[in-house]
Image 1 (cartoon, rainbow, N blue to C red):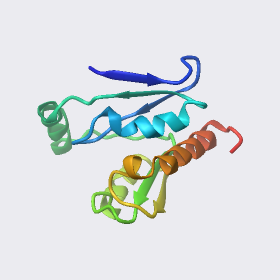
Image 2 (tube, rainbow, N blue to C red; image 1 turned 135 degrees about the vertical axis):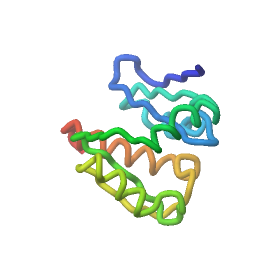
Image 3 (cartoon, helix red, strand yellow; image 1 turned 180 degrees about the vertical axis):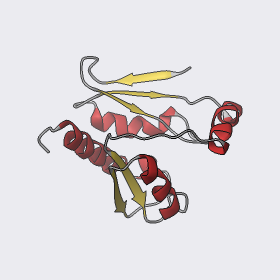
Image 4 (cartoon, rainbow, N blue to C red; image 1 turned 90 degrees about the vertical axis):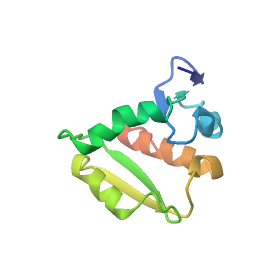
Length: 132
């Protein structure tokens, strides 16, 4: 597995995971903006066959899940893949879901890494009780 680390090894860890069909390089501009605050770790998710072998069966037979950790969802208003039904589904297992609608489209980390970095920092500060 290709793993990439940025920032101070003693800083709090932030893991950034890409989706299909991207790779870890998607997060490079975001990671560069967050290294003053985090040890950022990105990695290349293995290919489509591993995805199909692991994710599809779980989608067909989902296990009950729940988290009380606050979950942020950034919903670009121009992204057809991030829809209200998807957010509603996430809200079933994450009752502390916060949805922030922003102007933008798909591949937001690539198109506006500064915004993604700011939103990430704001959320982690809020969850950790840091001063925003």
